[in-house]
Length: 55
Image 1 (cartoon, rainbow, N blue to C red):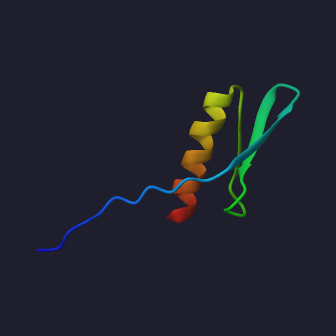
Image 2 (image 1 turned 90 degrees about the horizontal axis):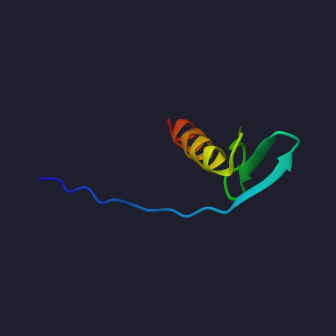
């Protein structure tokens, strides 16, 4: 029987305010950028972008 283990990775989110949006990127993962109207929305969108990049 095979076993699976959960792996938790922590990344640094670099973000800035661009007029009406929070824009951010994961510093350790090139190409993962997103935006959100709130910081919470940005964090959720960045997480989704990372998951989509993993395939």
